Image (cartoon, rainbow, N blue to C red):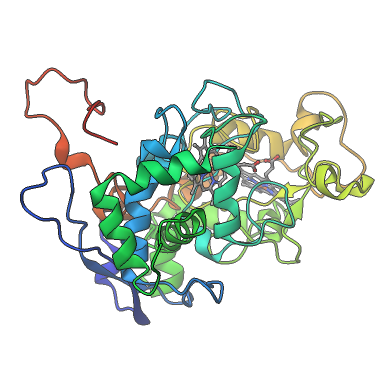
Length: 386
Ligand code: HEC
Ligand code: HEC
């Protein structure tokens, strides 16, 4: 299952991640893996804003910033604290937890193929670009995530005092005299995120590369169920990584609650329209078996639960609250135990193992790990990782 899609024929070679190689005498500074990322069939180049064309140097800097804990006021968190590669860039928690311990009212979203998604986040039709989105975790106060609201000067002076980053910024933005700005922090992070392309799951290999052996028999049967009129999953989960409804816009009500919490009611919180109550962005199902908490907040812990909810015609119906009449587009159906197993096998076939382990997307500080037997706990090297 580890066959990497990058070894498959590529439509075009446009994106690569790299940055200036590190001088040997600076052990903290890692040379980022230099390699090319071919675009899978059906994936055009990720859309970029006019003022932020994708370059190797920017994506390389973005990768270093993504894991940079000084992006949080108290130094406790980076983007990667919540968006962990091995969990498909989620955190496995029912609700995200910010740098000060504040609990978010939503679940962390995965970032695979985020460069192709818009609008971004669970329920905000105005969140159009990755650049714009970076400012949310940096400045969010409800809840605090990275805690940088009102502290941008501090953030910039931290970066300016770190020679490694000074160099990376000047390489990434060579035409600028003062490249260390919040705007460029966002541009670099967005550039890195655009390289997080995942299209190597068994399902992808089947649909994109015509590899008829890629899907195990159970997953094949589960796929037929998924796309059947009876289950109708694909009316909402379609397109590139089953994250796009067949009809735009990409928001839908899948009958989670009979009464949605006022503050976390979905699209209604942005639009004020009653019909938008309970409508959330249809999430991609890419790597879904690796992200063990489901939906926009603590609701379902396992995929088996998710299927049971849909089978009942929505979670609200399963919980005995009756079908949420207004807006829910989910219809009840009945599965035999074998069929449920097949559907689970299909969802498991959406896992792209190579993406989850690709060192180009991983922790750039990993090589600082102390030698075996050294005192620091695994994953923690305080004083070294910035
Ligand atoms: C405290 C945990 C936390 C941190 C830190 C964090 N995020 Fe997130 N991220 C979330 C949550 C929760 C959501 C969903 C938010 C929502 O819909 O309200 C999210 C959503 C996103 C999305 C939208 C994905 C999509 O498919 O629409 C992107 C992109 C993203 N985060 C990037 C980042 C970047 C870049 C950073 C660092 C600057 C970062 N995040 C830091 C928790 C976090
Ligand atoms: C009416 C549109 C709709 C239909 C039909 C639908 N879904 Fe969903 N699905 C959604 C929405 C919207 C969410 C996110 C809901 C939320 O977070 O509250 C979601 C979430 C999920 C999730 C959780 C993903 C995650 O990362 O949290 C899974 C798994 C899933 N759906 C599978 C299915 C399956 C399997 C079917 C068919 C039995 C199906 N869906 C049918 C709209 C739909």
